[in-house]
Amino acid sequence: MRIVVIGGTGHVGTYLVPRLVEEGHQVIVISRSQRKPYLPNKAWDYAEQITLDRQAAELAGNFAEQVIRLRPDVVVDMICFTLESARHIAEKLTDDVQLFLSCGTIWVHGHSVEVPTTESQPRSPFGEYGIQKAAIERFLLGEAERKGLPAVVLHPGHIVGKGWAPLNPAGNFDLEVFSTLAKGEELALPNFGMETVHHVHADDVAQAFVKAIEKPARAASECFHVVSSSALTLRGYAEAVAGWYGREARLKFLPWSEWTKTVSSQDAEYTWDHIAHSPNCDISKARQKLDYQPRYTSLEAVYESVTWLIQEGEIRV
Image 1 (spheres, rainbow, N blue to C red):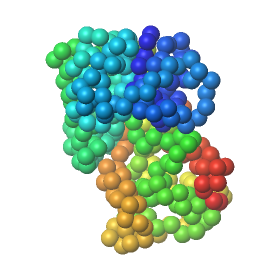
Image 2 (tube, rainbow, N blue to C red; image 1 turned 30 degrees about the horizontal axis):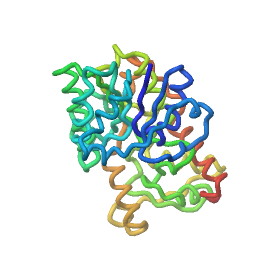
Image 3 (tube, rainbow, N blue to C red; image 1 turned 90 degrees about the vertical axis):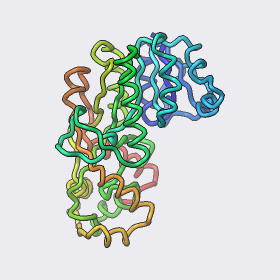
């Protein structure tokens, strides 16, 4: 099949494009610049890369037409962040593609009521990112029902892999947190460290997209969580990281108002966003309908990333 991947050089695209090429598909990657993927792979030599500024093309009103001119059987949209963008492309694709896959987020749920959270639970998103992604999901699945758009929405968790910083046990992206735990130094966590975070390796997200493409009848008109098999509590996550380096985690727990004084305002903002969402998502639906089988646990995915960052000199242990 001819598969167009919009935003294919990012975290997930680094793994998705080679998977599609190796499956024998003809792959066309649209990106804003000629940025290289996070990891090299010879499969990229067999993918066509097209430079196209999505925002500029949408303002000109011709982004969807430019995608359609590529004659795709399948379109994978990794970088749709507003309802307007979703409307622009989806309304033109209903009769032109066999499948349209959009990358969402587990943050469409907002606060969890029951955990692990299933795809069928009501949406109560907060924050611009989660609100927009929930609106995109609602629109695409509505178009599937109303007009037959063969839409699929896949909701990843906190994506992790070689080449970028993983969400850490304090719920932000400060690499010093890993250094502190590796050295056996004291780490402060907010509240009781019992909020949850739910990681997923980028290659497992790529796996889910490929599985959905392989099973269009099961995937179309559906949404799926794409995360590891289990979420982590901040406390358990910190204890595991310390254990990787033969240490016992030295943790102290502070009320939120006190804890924010120990970190930068940006790190406090990141942490609040993650612990306020505190995701813990169920993947039974993806397992049953798509045969999604994550290769990595949350800790395995983070360990791979942290090991790479140590080798690159980004984390000191």
